[in-house]
Amino acid sequence: MSSKPGRLLQLDVLRGLAVFGILLVNVWAFAWGSLSLRYGTLAPDAPWLDQAAIFFVAAFAELKFYPIFAFLFGAGFALQTRSLKRQLGSWQAAQAAYRRRLRWLLVFGLLHGFLIWSGDVLTSYAVAGMLILPLAAARLGRVRNRAWLVAGGFLLFICLLYPVGATLSPKDIAEGLQTFASRHATYTQGDLAAVAALRARDYAMQLLYAIVMLPHIIALFLLGILAVRFGWLLQPQRHRQLWRWVLLLGLGVGLPFNLLSASATLWQTLHPYQTLFNEPLLGILLFIGGPLLAAGYVAALMLAGPFMLQWLGSWLAPVGRMALTNYLLQSLIGTWLLQGPGLGWAARLRPVEMLGLTVLIMAGQVVLSRYWLRYFKQGPFEVLWRRVARLDQSAPQSKEA
Image 1: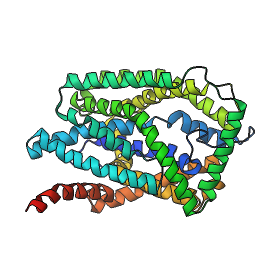
Image 2 (image 1 turned 45 degrees about the horizontal axis):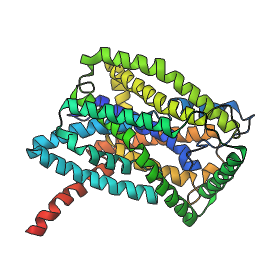
Image 3 (image 1 turned 30 degrees about the vertical axis):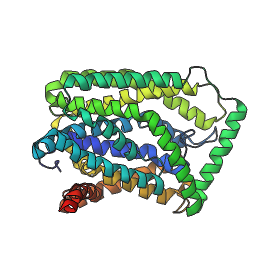
Image 4 (image 1 turned 135 degrees about the vertical axis):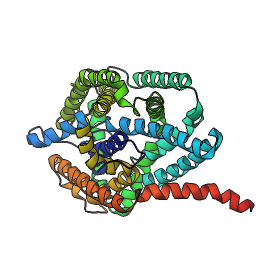
């Protein structure tokens, strides 16, 4: 199956890959509802398959696909605002139309965060999109300078936020484990009211965390805009040397960072009282190494041959064309299967079984996306998003009439 005419197959494949990669990480949060000890805890003699499942996700998925998703949002921003400018005749009209889309994306994000799952990213994307909207018609030099400024400022900020050498006392660790166990019990065994109350508190905290992460998201958005305007994504065959260097950097530098971080994550899961690894320092390494390995993934796809690209496209492009629908559907399915108000499977599934469940959800979404797009041009939430944005546009006109 090829991509829809007028669309870039590489971008649809990347979106599908990012949606599935995000699920690999999010499924643990559906179960544990925690940013610390995000994979739960295991006995030191846990089966090696369970340990391998956690190591695999931590090494090859955590903080790799969220950057790709944000990068692609920035690329989509550049493509869509340019298309709107051609349709509407001016950058001012194009920005107004895109602003309406972002407002409704913000509404979807808030509903998603408060009603389904507290780890929503749509709210952050909507706010970041509004902040960069004036750059839609900006010169390349201005966009590039803004990207360097925001990225550099964010790296400096996290270095100050996570001081090297900071450690928790055994008492703090014990209290944290008690809180973690209580939250896990609520999410996996609590009733609808208890889970809703905890989710609302978590989402309020998530919104504060999103403010801290906003510069990181904006930097990735700007990188996506540059990738479109320089032609890196639109004409990858003309920039193969660039993509080779990106692949070399992603694998040569990013992979060791992530293997070290995954080893620390697994060690913490097996030994939650551990003090061997400095968690704040590893947090910095993950913020550096994660996006680097993500860039390597993107480069590998840009360098893929026609046969490999078509094969990946047959499975991943339909998922990417329905990225918003599939992202929200993952939250609905995951929370229903794993949390207390639904089936509550998280209370008894082993890590390797969690990973297996994730693969089954992915397979189901591939089948659903391919079937849906046989009969419709877009996913249901994509249609709803554009329809409410158009209604938002026509409302003031009808009022004046």
